[in-house]
Length: 96
Image 1 (tube, helix red, strand yellow):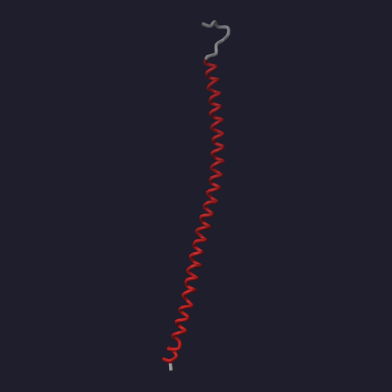
Image 2: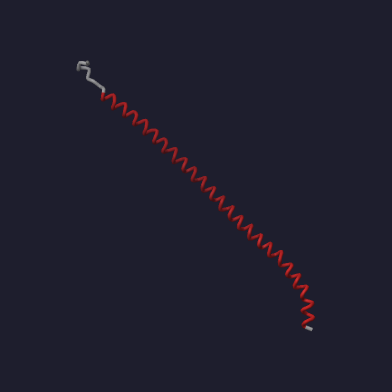
């Protein structure tokens, strides 16, 4: 009797195995989609971080450029003043 039960149960076992294959593949697909979504979000966060770093660097470069430009202009003005003082003569002294 038990052997007959096993013979009757084998087709059901095969059917159950065939039903498990799609669920395994669906679970595998869901896992792959989850990992793809996770990597996409990490890439998006990195891109956002890079954007804010780029803006901060642009602001930093702009202010340092302005400071260097002012420094160059100030040093040029000081050089002109020093050269004028170097060649300045008193009006009471005779010139050559």
